[in-house]
Amino acid sequence: MEYLDFAKDLAYQAGKIIKNNFSLKMVTEWKADNTPLTITDTQVNQMVIDKLSLAFPDHSILGEEKSLIKTSSFTWVVDPLDGTIPFSHSYPLFTFSLALTYNGRPVAAVIYDVMLDRLFWAQKDRGAYLDNKKIKVSPTSTLARQLMNVELDVSDFHGIFQKLVFEQKAYASTLYSASYGGILTAAGVMVAEVYAWDKPWDGAAVKLIVEEAGGKVTDLNGKEQRYDRQINGFVASNDLVHDKILALIERARTG
Image 1: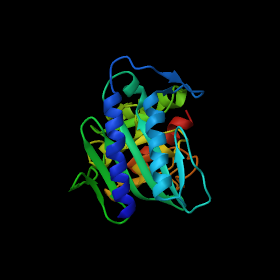
Image 2: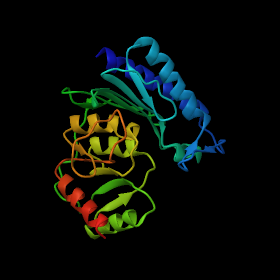
Image 3: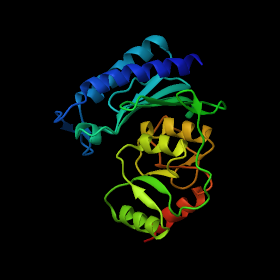
Image 4: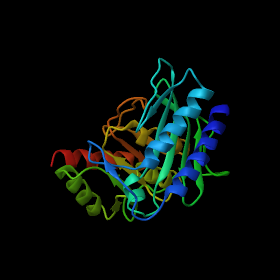
């Protein structure tokens, strides 16, 4: 609980910075991977490192913009602003995401929906919550008429996968925030989040919150993975449709 309470407090502090900096026509730089970067990303990332390194000096910190790597079983994984594309384009759909991993497995996590002031959190084996209310994934076992968030790429794989989703009479959105899709999956609003990149900070908190809400999170091959290093994407679902989504991914890969 010490770790979780600290993470919650950090989320609210980060949220204040993010909300204060949110405006029209923000200055944006572009990173080597063709994703945007704002001063808010770096400011929040540094704040998290400063406070975590002071409170838990033996812990490692893995951040999207900056890390403080140490030899430790504990690693904090932070995305200071997940949804920089919508943030930098002035529409309010982004989060602050933070998870504590032990030997690569998330044990405490928070995802803060800043603009709606909604804090999603979970502790290993203690359930998942929105503020003080316990949340559960959707009970549906079908993809038809369900919505999933898809964060893939512009390759043929992306197009083929979305076509296969529509053939199931389901819907696929792209929010440009994997953690936002993750919390909506955990809350039972979406049926799944599908993410094809290798960034652990986009999946660490989602892994714990969705599974503590009764769902399932694996890599794109249906296997478990560590979240304190590069990942093989992830599928976060309500569990009941997990194998169906993995099957669609495999069909998309084979064309």
